Image 1 (tube, helix red, strand yellow):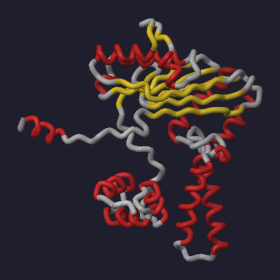
Image 2: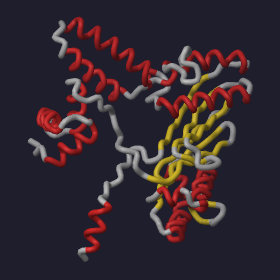
Image 3: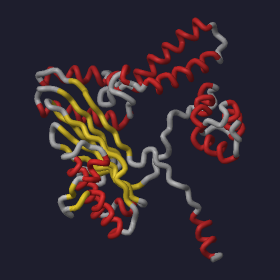
Image 4: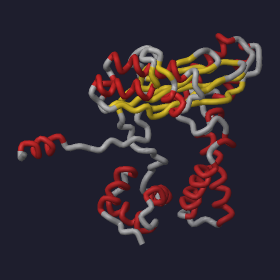
Length: 308
């Protein structure tokens, strides 16, 4: 049996917001499994913690480059926000995004591609920038979308300059309709994705493991009511329908016009575009998502230095 250490309890408390004793009990019940313990707390109504990928703590920039029918978004990390405000770093992020347009959009392919300004691979160009700026940098993530007919719209939230910011979104619309209409609609849908962070475009595309995990939590929550299994099954099915509505892009209430779902808004735009429109892809990169920076006690660091 896994030892339930104070560090493990502390980690669960930070992720769930639940009390220390509740966290210890949850870990004991789940043999020290953090994710299972979070689900246990949620099922008991003690925590509303969801599938957190970690605190967004990394610094740097998200950069986007687009060419109508294709676009790419990359995340270039730095150690401090100070460096992220450096003109050289910002130009590097934009430059890497432009290079990425001619690749398949994977970090490996982008790293190996030639950076025009240096004539060297992007990976080597980043190493040179590290030596020049004096801070570690990492090309962490990238995503590329492309359509044969239609547009790939882009959106940068909290923009720090042209094509750079803290959150970047791509959305691919397949259509032979009017490009201006598609671009306008695509940007609105991209803004919606930035705000709501949907798990999938359609309910049937939600990851099966994620859906099953949610179902199990709902089952445990419903059983707390003490109702018969037949009633519980109906309760769970209703909650699952609501879950899919909330996490699937096309069934979400459109932030631009909450009276419509995103799917209905896309359908309504077809008349103006003069052709059918299909959302075929999306990508959303939030700076530092899934990266947890080690917490530091500045006062303690200074005291340690003073002691020699």
